[in-house]
Image 1 (cartoon, rainbow, N blue to C red):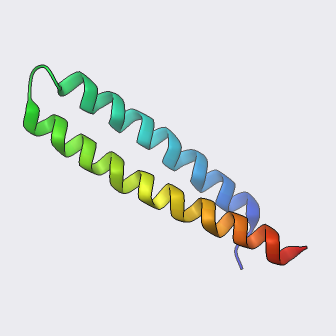
Image 2 (image 1 turned 180 degrees about the horizontal axis):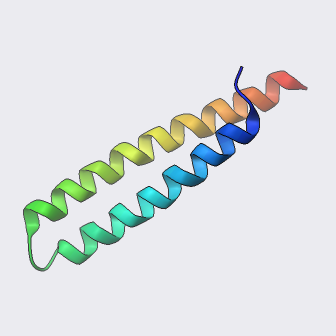
Length: 65
């Protein structure tokens, strides 16, 4: 199993990236719809990975006790 601090750091990094991509998508919404859609798609991919990490983190803490 991985170290819980690594999971937490990775989760924080992904959350920052997700928020940045969502902001980019919002900012591009008025000027360039293609770039907005791309940023939104990437944000959804990051959110999916973030949810996977949350599941692993929960699973790690359940089995470590």
